[in-house]
Amino acid sequence: MEAVKPDRGLGKEEKMTEVKDEILYQPILKTSRGFYIVFALLLFVVLFAAYAYFIQIRDGLGVSGLNSPIFWGVYITNFVFFIGVSHAGTLISAILRISKAEWRRSITRSAEVITVLVLFFGLGNILIDLGRIDRMMMVIRHGRFQSPLLWDVVSITTYLTASAIYLYLPLIPDIALLRDRIKGGFRGRLYQVLALGWAGTERQIHYLEKGIAIMAVTVLPIAVSVHTVVSYVFSMTIQPMWHSAIFGPYFVAGAIFSGIAAIIVAMAVLRRVYHLEGYFREVHFNNLGILLLVMTCLWLYFTFSEYLTVFYGAEPDEIKVFMEKFTGKYAPHFWFMVMTCFIIPFTILANSKTRTIKGTVIASISVNIGMWLERYTIVVPTLMHPRLPYETGMYSPTWVEWSILAGCFALFAMIYMVFTKLFPIVSIWEVQEGREKAHDEVAERLRTYLPL
Amino acid sequence: MKEVNTSIENKVVLSVQVFLLIGFYIFAAGVFTFLWYAVYRSVVDSDHPVHAVILASVITFAFLILVSVVTMVFTVVIKEGQKKVSENGGSVHEGEM
Image (tube, rainbow over all chains, first blue to last red; front, side, top):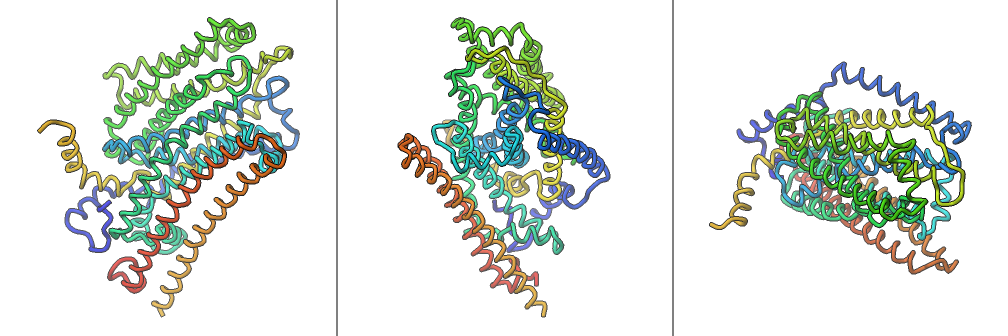
């Protein structure tokens, strides 16, 4: 973190670094017309979703496709999906930070922002699914620790708090750089407050690094617990194809899978829009592509284990749900999921010639579509054939649900865009630190790994 | 006059920073209250209190770590920043006044 040394002015080498990283300030200092056009389009989608939500508030959940016994649908699918994607930042960034993977330096910030933002959308979808949001107060006033729903509430609150802190701490030196550049006005005051008086002193650096290290270790078990607990909402019931011991790790693996895919897509967009080719390089896409390939295989392994166990058990209630997915109404969703979660990404990523930037982005988009479908095919077919003797349910999402889904993605993109306008989307001090220290650190580590 | 303005501005900034920290403490206090109120209810209703105590303790422990980290970083960075401000006469950097 020694790159931030405003106390002693800039030396020749540091001035070179400043010039090198000048492009990282550009999104904050200049806003193109394209930004406003995209922002306006997204705002239109968000407003339409707000209108759809208003209709739902006014007329009740009857305007959605939810009914008895299918009381969970698109909203709960969104909840599980967004919580899964939230594993993008914190978990992956923490793993890379702890393992001292040098290539992480330019990608961690963009990933950590995804985590904090999508968690709000996960929580938001729960509130939308409640119909009347005042029912949330019931959880606060009458919540029981016997319910996995309360486990969700507390673990997601902890994760959101931890992720926000984990995003903010490494931002402090960069905010200080902005404070020194932008004086006065709303932004100037905002940076002055959020920089906390950062001056890059030895003591500040020491305690900030200590704080980041503690958070990196703390956030890992919290992140794993969150998606495990999300899976418990399903697996602690005895509904067919939900009551499964591997649901916890299956959900965590799926979350990391969709999280990596989300980072790759975000990186590709940022690279293109803000011309950050120097920071999001082929090696980053290649490394994340390899991670995605590993997760693709792991996803197939978990899915295979889960479905094979159900098939061999042949318990009548479970088989009804199994067949609904394999050959019934949800067969198109299921097989499309297999194609997008395994066949497409595996084919692209297993071959080094197709594991290019374009290839990894296509694979990632495919994975994100597939993972949403996976959550959908977990939630809906089981409720269609519940264990209790209900009539077979039918569920078709309405325009209200699709609009709210589109609105969630649009609002996420809008807030992400606003973030890039306020804060550097690549951690400037970490990049500078990498340039200054990485050579010596890697050489030192090599000396400890290999015989002299 | 300029020095007086800078001094007032620094005090306002410091107050907002302290307010942010207090805001975080209030949030954490709200979480603790929520957790232990649920435990209290489970004890009063004899509704699996041990279960509730274990879960509330785990989350309390996690939040204590978060509160400690935030306190540590905020206090050190703010204090050091204030020291620099008083050394440099209103700015965190030398010769900026």
